[in-house]
Length: 252
Image (tube, rainbow, N blue to C red):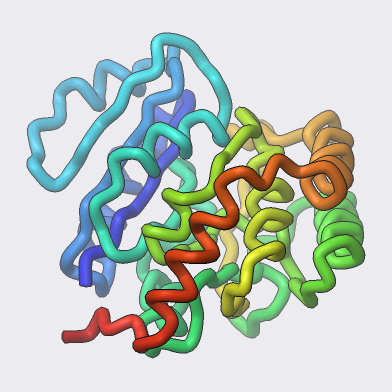
């Protein structure tokens, strides 16, 4: 089994080196790291250009396009059996990769969300209204998708690679989260959720998502659930139907 770790990165010079080390020291040994430098202007680009490591594939955007755009670039390059999204900050712990991809490895899941709100693990205490906003957006998303997720906005999402490659991602920024949730809900996929820890950071430490992104997320929930372009979904559905006849044998 090979895991593709997709890292959208914008102005993370203070964390990117430690993050790369954490990924390489994760319990999953067969990993490719795909970093998309999304137009950084803080020295991140210079640091990444100094890296010479065959395990790391670095893609450079000439200007900042957003998380969704960075993930499109990373997914196109992924060669692993499973893709997992890893933000370039240190809010999520690569030591927990086995927890997130475990249901896929066991042949039980096709997509796994790592929930920050379904866990007995450690959580940094940060913003109350962020938690309220996340809960509201997840509830609104669930109303449309008929899923019972507890954390739609989580970074840690893992997919069988053929599934995520077959889905047309439109959103450029944080609208990726409700968009991909809406689109996978329309497929006959086995979606799991597992608890993870969360080391949230403050705006002074570099947190980027804000209230405007929450407003846009509401728009995306409505758009992609009710008016989504599903041109690529039948292809994904066909691929899944064929592959689901046998268990996903990643442990061999």
